[in-house]
Length: 357
Image 1 (tube, one colour):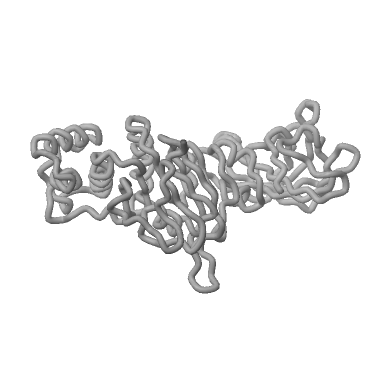
Image 2 (cartoon, one colour):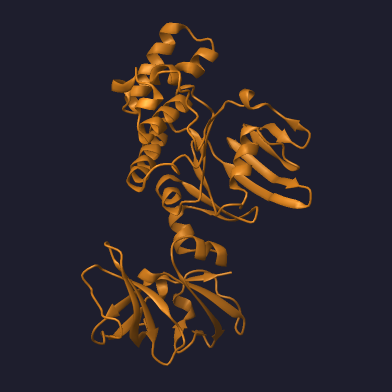
């Protein structure tokens, strides 16, 4: 039986549908990210799961029991869920240990068990040496660890996280996203994680649900979301891509100035004559100074470097294929330096290209 099920879930404020007919199922121990831009409905969905917002349609069930439906919402405190907020929401007048053990005290557990479980979880999140500190004496990352420990120590059936890393600097965000995944692998708590940060979702989730305008556009494993996006929005929102329009004829997809063999592309190809949209990731192309040896199915086009940006780990080039009006973004290794205006050869790998609905 699934641990958490959202069926036809919706929330409207008057004529405005903030969440529209969302279906999502989480198995026990699964980590799912709700990913999307601001205003897409992901936080409203999370708050409906938590019981803070009543849905206007559909239902939320856990272990087969309906928790939320229009007119019938089980209170948050009876849902066996823990939630971590963007602001951490740890109590400033309590020490680290008191914050972490607070939920156990509410469960009226014996004092000895509260102390033992608090000490155990503080060891897991590497905060034992700071047990007697107050939140004002902690860094942002340390406060986030306290929030995680407090949420996990009560052994919830479902863990909810609402953009928990948005207040941290870039290096600390990267550290904490791996810490969150480590804790999930250790405790296997069913988790719903809301974020607008693609890197967070890719690093933490078993599956990603990409949301747009209140709807889920695609639910898939991170690598499938990136390499096989099903819609134009998903392709453009996840990472960087070149979206190219073409048509299929005689087994080839005709584009502006060149063609690709349809059989070598990823994803289903529409019928002949129908318009086709391709997602061509920057790393699915390569630049060469001299014309490379032709490989079957890989077009090689003369092109000119139009723009370039050095990103440290790579170069981001914009190239203009000759006899084409296209401008294509191409990723190259950091030591592969091309000047603006330089003539190059552009090699395209069709197996890394996805057909987008």
